[in-house]
Image (cartoon, one colour):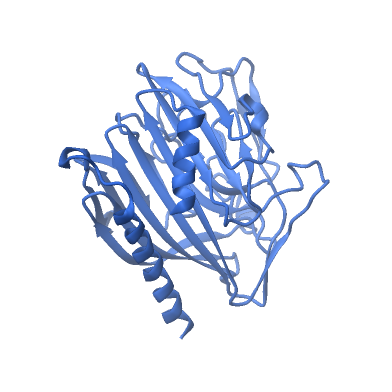
Length: 356
């Protein structure tokens, strides 16, 4: 009965979203409508999303990965905004944090299990403390004139085979001549007597961006992950590297890390075009406005579960769920290309997202 209700809930969300779309202002002519195609490719363990005739992104779910994720993510002007490593390494990229793959969601401490930092680069002993996320089934897809729908069910699996969390995701993909949108609605349901998302900075809704969106680095770096594993990165070629952050609260640069904001923009110039990635938090989300685990080396993450690291221990969350209880998150990734995205423009788009 519970599973049936969950399925009806997912369908209801889909119907509501489509109803909102019909109520919104329609394009002035047919040329402004760009069809979206969601194509199942089971032999390759992925789902391709194309807008017009161009690949936008793919939902990757092979069991050789530690989690499903979207990769690559391509802007309307054809520029890829995700880092290639470790899936498809590109020349000049950093090879730190191999668990940063495309656009994904997981967390670093769920009942003591690390779902965030798992990768094949860890030792067997380290991986024995990590969890994986597996696709359970593809619930539904739809290819529409102005949007694409992908609904999936996933399981968070601990190293002992237990499943503390089931996850139900609705992706809605949209695009126009100079923008792309990913709406991500995810519902987490506890499957144990109690599930705790212990407070840590290692999470949660995240994208690892291409080199041009990083900040220029002038000295070697050593990255230490939550397992204590160090990765040394030498001084890299900074040609074309010009990323910068701007938050809804007016904060710029690397200082946005650990701050709260309704939305956060990361932008840079590639091939003469400005490409802006705006990550939007929804007012209904836990711990809104979210804290941002947004780094200068290319990690761009919203963390609704963490407070302790961002407040130097002044606040702590440790979110708990009882068996059968659910929490839902709504986020939008808005990718604009061709010109700068002003704060006024972003506020307008964020308000539209909130109204939907």
